[in-house]
Amino acid sequence: MKRKLVTIPLSIMLVSSFALAACGDKETTTPAASTDAAATAAATAKVDNTPAAITIMAPLNTAQTPPDTIIKELEKLTNTKLTYQLFPADTYDEKLNTTFATGALPQVVYLKNQASFIQMKSAIRDGQFWEIGPLLKDFPNLSKLKSTTNDNTKVDGKLYTLYRGVDIARQGLIYRKDWADKLGIKPPANMDELFAMAKAFTENDPDGNGKKDTTGIADRNDLIYGSFKTLAAWMGTPNNWGVVDGKLAPEFTTPQYVATMDFVKKLRDGGYINKDFAATSKTDQQKLFTSGVAGMYIGAMTDVSSLNKDLIKNVPTAVVDVHSMVAGPDGKFAAWALPGYANVLLFPKSAIKTEAELRKILAFFDKMMTPEVANMAFWGIKDANYTLTDNKAKKSDEEKWTREVKPFADMAIGDEDTSGRYLGIPTIPAQGKADELKIANLKYAVQDPTAALDSKTNLEKGVQLQAVITDATNKYIYGNIDKAGFDKAIEDWKSRGGSKIIEEFNAVYKK
Image (cartoon, rainbow, N blue to C red; front, top):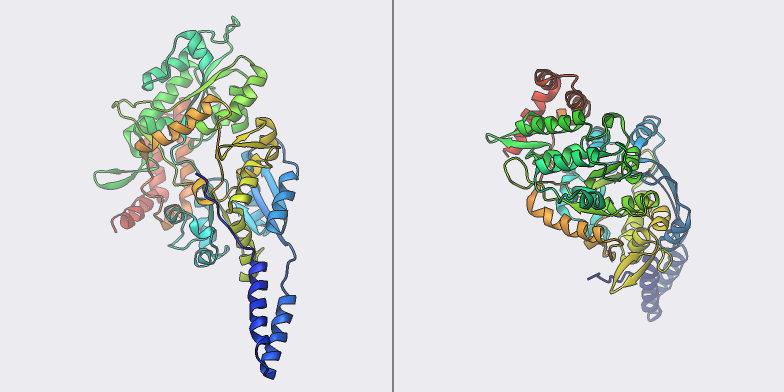
């Protein structure tokens, strides 16, 4: 049930308080009281209702920049003048790094994901961004953000970020149900059946055109948000770090990680996954699925509606479904869990000079978490972008919503239950199933034990060192190195700072 919050604009509160003060003064006859009344009237007259100008930089997950329809509505609701600098998600980190290096960051900066946040922690430590934790108590809606998620974004115990909430265990399989039905294949119960489905979708002409022009799985150059991380969780791999013999150990030092590499290598060697996945962007990965070439997409099940929208344009008879309960070799279920946020946003001191200016920007985001504004940003304009039934929203036109609203929904602060925005009515059955499965997955969610921990060396060198493992993982899957070569890469990681990272994480883990 959506909560209805009643908020009183700050300007009205100020005027009301001054008016009350003025009335009280009229009841006295002393000169001092008259002077106070005059001062109060003057202060009231100086209340500044000028729209606050705010510039926001964020990644764009749609093919085109949105029209300004939603922006204009948000400006009216929040008394702001908004400028959005949106850049394609595939190249966003590169653009962000360039903008940061030139000192040209705007007042509000969204990061792309958890990895981007870890990379930015050194700059946060250097004092280049505002700490906002002590200020949130002054904002009734921002103070409702989940403390556990806030804790996962703190740096040295201090909060610098607002977060965009995410379904903790949303990962699973989106697949062509019409292909599976034609070939007599049930949703995979384990990794062997998953492999068999990928093989059948490649070799058994599921589209019925008499040509061998399909592939099992569409993947991309991302070992986290592509297929690999989800497959690794199903295989029993820890989430970034695991507890081995009572101590924290990196996931890539576990036998389950190696088994996952072997699984993906077997898929690639057989041609059941796009062989150039390490050079494939997210956009091209999704095109493999929506063009009718690939039958499986492993990632966020909540993407099923948007993928289906583009798929049926090319294959009108296509039917999609979702699945998540895939047992590992040990017969157990596991789901990779996110730390409660999809990404975060920061406030650069280079663009915000005073605390007063920072407070104006935080006031904007506080308003963005009221139900009225949150619904505008997430769902759009009622009857134009969505309809309302039993206090739940349903997109009127998926394509129109994606074009006009999705970029702003992707910047929504908080969660459904902290902002009070409407829950959604699924546009297709598979979306409703995805909503159910992401809740069912919570029972098997595997958290990262280091999510709220800090390692100085990891902050300084973690991103560069992770590139060593990413490169070695791809080389192993491609067959360019063997297990000995991968072990050598791990030793390289350790010698360049990895051993120190293990030591530092374990030191704080034991406290």
